[in-house]
Every structure is written in structure tokens, then in C-alpha cells.
Image 1 (cartoon, rainbow, N blue to C red):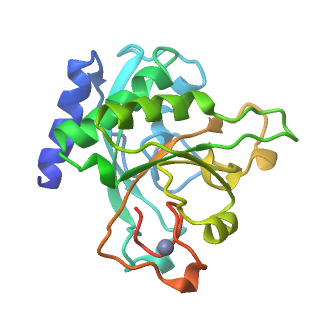
Image 2 (cartoon, protein in one colour):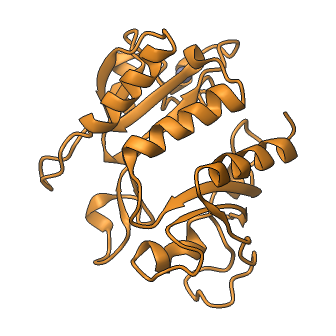
Amino acid sequence: MTTQEIRKAYLDFFVERRHKVIARAQLVPNNDPTTLFTGSGMQPLIPYLLGEPHSEGQRLVNSQTCLRAQDIEEVGDNRHTTFFEMIGNWSLGDYFKKDQLPWFFEFLTDVVGLDPSKLYATCFIGDKANGIPKDTESAEVWEKLFKAKKVDHKQVEIGSEADGAKKGLQNGRIFYYDASKNWWCRAGQINNMPTDEPGGPDSEIFYEFDFIKHNPKYGKNCHPNCECGRFM
Ligand SMILES: [Zn+2]
């Protein structure tokens, strides 16, 4: 599939699931003094994620052009770009994990045609200090989805990236990482989050390029959040 076809398939997939396609925001935002460029699909939607009603309803889908400079020195490796498009579907107080994860999995496997045995999921391990529980709900959804595709679905506790290098894959399919990997917010870390900042545990999916050999420069063992390039 070309990038044009992937974008169209994604938008169509979510329109079939009662989403409205919204226009992309300007690359140079005219009403956000915190940033020079639109850097993510989420950025123009922040007021609505914080509760302001959106004129197109509670289910939105978009393809947002983004420009980022913070990792510009890393451009040229196998995963960093400065100007790119981010496709996203948005639930403004409507559906949650039980719909989102199966839809995304269906899109990747049945629409794009990725081999489910090359996919690996990650979930939040929990944070005792802040009283945030382990995200077993997402892991259970992933487990069912892999099972339905007749793919092994073992859950493995990792923790940090350094823990991953020590522990390795352990024949796992669903991996629990700490807040350094599976906590989403603009400040990056739970403890740095300003009051009223949107954020929380996230769940991610990785594709394994099995022809790329793990580079021991990144630690003894490979794991989904390893930086060697085997997992994206
Ligand atoms: Zn690796």
C-alpha cells in the first residue's frame, strides 16, 4: 500500500465506525503560543480533549501534517522524521479501550494486512507511588485479539528500557512497561505533569522487522522498546 492508500483506508475505516473526518489544522498554529509548529495530531484537539464540545461530534478522525524539531539531530536513522503525517481517531468522552484496541488491531491486520505474529503490544505496568493501577484491562483485550488470530499471547512484566535489555522477550507478546514508556503526556513524566494536563497510561503496538539483528550496543537482549531498530 502507498501512503495515500493507507491514509484513505484509515479515514474510511473510522468513517464506517461513525467518525467524522475533520480538516487538518495549519502547520503554523495561529492560536497556540506554546509552540511554533503543529507537532502532533492531538495538538489542535486539546481543547476538545479537555471537554469543550466539538461541532462535528464525539467521534473524529484526521490526518495531521506535523513538524518537529526536538529530535532533528536523529533524522536519518530508521525512525525519525521532521515533517510527517499523523493519522488519529478520537473519542471525545465516547468509546474507550474495549473498542479502540480491537479497531486498531483490525485495521493493522485485516486492512493493512500486517502479519499478526509480527505484532507486539505494550501496556502500563502501574505506578504505586501515584496510586495508578496496572493496565490489565488493555492486556486482556490484546490477549483475546492475538488468541483469535491463533498467535501466542503471553504477558511479560518489563519495567524500564534498561530492564528490557536485561530481561529480553521471554517469548512474550504483551509487555508491561513503566511510565517512561507507557505513560502519555506532553511533559513526558507523571511527576512533571502540570495541573489539568491531559495524559495517562497508554498502550502501544510494535512491528518486528525480524531481518534486523539486535545490536548489543543497546543492551544484552532485545525487547519491543529496544532502540536497535528491530521493533518499530
Ligand atoms: Zn534490539
